[in-house]
Image 1 (tube, rainbow, N blue to C red):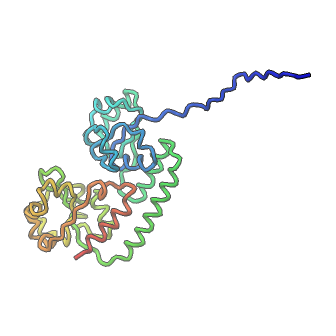
Image 2: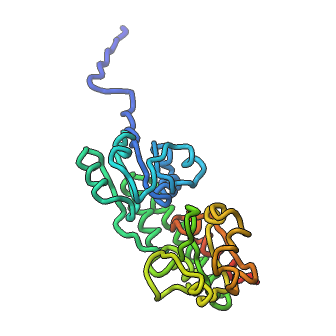
Image 3: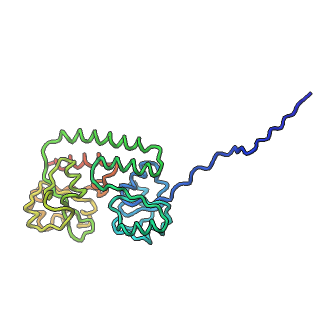
Length: 279
């Protein structure tokens, strides 16, 4: 005698639960954008700011302007569900307006220019986005920095360095204390000739430039282009009269790579340290 069994599966679904919906992410600041891509979350970014130039995919996204001169209308119009911004992004009241409009805004709390802060930013952003490889990325970065530090410790001398910023082409400024340029020069075991004189960036007279007597001048590739090339840059009042100008020791590097304090920092510092020591 055959027996037939009918099994009723009540309330059991063979379809796996839907994965959590991806964020509609707006990143403000080149370092934030780089970290998000490094964490494998770049596909969630719908827009960013004009300092977000790396990786190449970041260039193809809509831009909301410069990170320090944002507008509430521009941010809200992206229809983002979350905004992650660098510590220096703003103005502050604009970010407050966006929060009041119901958009989650996460702003990194510490804008210090240190290798340790990069690791902290990786962990903070990774936690916010629930990235599974957060600790792996942070640990890899910390290991790379330790290796770079070891190489830097063996480099000879302490070159006298002047950093010149002129990305807009509307007048050169030089870097004093509490700037990313001052921090990276120190990390490269160089001496910022403007350290201890003032904070931030300011225009410099030709007389003061000559008196500073830098061995080498560091600028950005964007600044060199805005100046009309190396020959025009050397015509900046006072530069040709410095030891650096006379010997042609002018170094240019990509702005975000050099000053971004992002996961590429170990490579950027090592490259700068070697470049400022070349005759």
